[in-house]
Length: 208
Image (cartoon, rainbow, N blue to C red; front, side, top):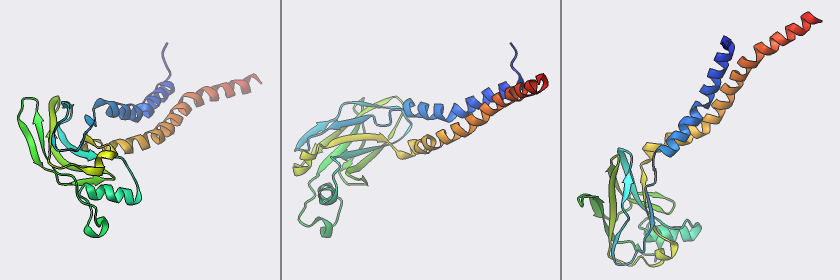
């Protein structure tokens, strides 16, 4: 059965309406944006993370995260993690002290350094970054020199995530895809239904 032109156009518009949804779903699940999130005890000694796989050619961030608190407790956490001034921190001391390494699966050191906050998001403190490659495997080691004191009561975790430049378009796509879908979908349905309705109305008039 051959479809009339208006029906082909309408179906095409419905497919176009679903396009952004499909793209958002694909991007959401095509990559592992957060390949490592493991608990760590911040006491003197060496900690080595499980091996994790990166699947993007791009920048990855390494962070230390603790429970999200608020008010004075949040300020105290941030001071213990090395963010704040003597005016905001008072007697609260910087308790984090460790060396870190990013190690490839063949044992080569990709990147290394000493803990120093380079970014902050609430109580997630970024301290390192490295260039990831598709299908490569690596791990993170921490050589902890000092007990992190109360931070250990706030469930510290070592986190690796893709740099925001890799996924920053996703929130916009998720926001606009329903608007696009509804608008284009309505047009598609009108293109399909209006000619049929118009013919039915003309038939009723002629029969009357």
